[in-house]
Image (tube, rainbow, N blue to C red; front, side, top):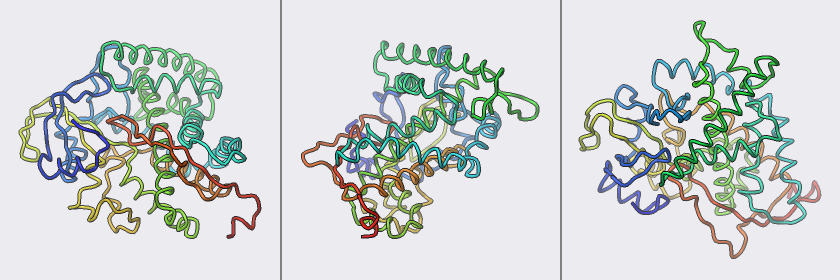
Length: 394
């Protein structure tokens, strides 16, 4: 395969090989070989049809806790796990965190205002969601960096046995940490997600230890990676299209449309995975039971059959709800309200303090070499600090 960031390559695959088997494709948990799905209609089918396509794709290798969470589950277990977790992410609940998130945004941004430049990825986009999801889970501030390091190790693309062992070691480390944290919460409940998961029941049944550990780790990963990528991708879009930023400042009611178009063009999650539950036909190809399927969300979002003139940024598209950036069907990401709330608060804070944002002259931008995440490794930007209220009004 060529670059996973190549939009022309995706276009070629949609036209000529919409469902294609790549024996050399390697998932971050070590599995090798998968069907690659590029068109919107096949992608939507695989994501939606849980009767034929399973979400239990991470192998159960004993030491692998990532295979036990709401994101890697099928009905009926999925309904139980989701009902326990999703109620924490409804807008009415997450809105309680608005003032705290705003405070974090201001604190993270403040050191850079006088400098007039920053690496938006490393200095802001990574820092904010790391704090937010850890706060919601109940992880103490002094442990945020360590937990983030473990999670990053877990999801690093695995190419060698050494990398797989490092991933398993990180899983055991974070499992040990969370077990101690859960014991503390049993004796001293707090207003956080770990306490909520410990106390919640569905039909009189509570989560087992493995399901609880896997769910917390999976949520930290999803809550951090998707938001960090979205923040960076939004800032990149505004640098490329300053007229879009100006429109947002003039028409904040269009926030959702603009963010949804950013998510279509640069989806935080680049791909998702399923496993065939039985032999079937997909896009003219014969898929065997047990075959792995990699769904390229970014390619589906550029399918001209669904999104005419897909390479044009147009937040007035009438069918932005058809994007697959957060999945589709019963596994649609329940963390979307939190991701969008964080992003909206961050943009409000950032653009109440700075203007004239541009990519730093001479900077070379490289996208993250990942089959999972669409984002930039760094995003050096320059800007002007707003000094007076009159500057905001201009």
